[in-house]
Length: 269
Image 1 (cartoon, rainbow, N blue to C red):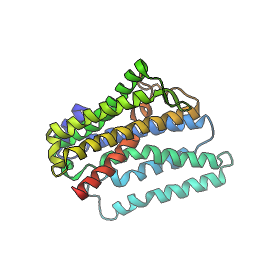
Image 2: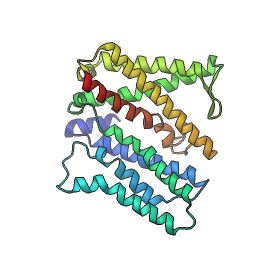
Image 3: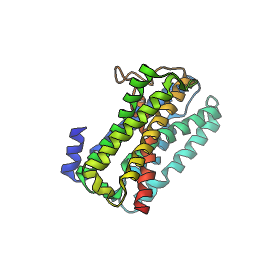
Image 4: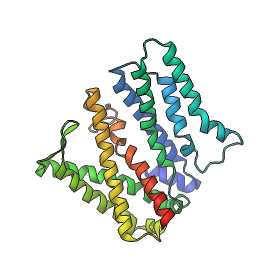
C-alpha cells in the first residue's frame, strides 16, 4: 500500500488507490457469487456490469470525463438492469432468487466505491489522503484484533450466536474501545486533524466510534452471508485470512458510514 500512496502522491491524483479498490471489489464480488452459486444459478454478466457502474460515479469522482460520457456512465446501471431482467425472463434455469442475489451482490460489494470519495479537506492533500485511509484501516482492523483477543480470553456473552457463535459482547466492547482509540489518534494527533479543523475533538472521537461500530456490523453481515452459504471462509486467496471478501467485509459498511458522517461534519463544522 505504501507504493500505492507514493504513486498517487507523485501523480497528484487518486489513481493507484482506485485500481486497488476496483481489484478488491472484483475479487470480492467473485467470491460472493461463488458462495451464492452453491444455492442457485446467478446471472453473472449483468451482475458484474451493474456492480461496476453502480460505483462509477464514485470511481470517476474528480476525473473529467469527455462530454456525454459522464451521463452515459451514470445511467449504465439501468442498461445492465434491463439485461438482467431479460436474462431472467428467457433463462428458465435462473429464477427470481438468482436474479435477486445477483443484484444484492452487485449492490453489496459496490459499497467499496464509497472509498473513492474523500472529505473535502482530505481529497487534495496527498498526506491527508494517505492518513485518512490509514485511519479507516486501523480503525477496522484494530477493532477486529482487540475483539478477537478479548473475546477469546474473557468473552462469555455471545453477540450473535446464530451468525457467528465465537463473537462476544465483551470482544465487541473491547473492539469499540481499541478502534476508537486508534482512529481518534489519527484524527487528533496527525496532519489529518487539519482536514476537520472546525470540528471539536469530542465529535471526532464520536466519528471514530461510528466508523468502528460500522466495521463490526460489516463483519457480522459477511458472517451472515457465509452462514447462509454454509462456508467457513469466502475463499482461499489469502492463506490464513480466507478470501478477499473476508478482508474487505468491514469496509463494505464502514466506508459508506465514514462518507455519510464526514459529509455531516462538513455541513455543520
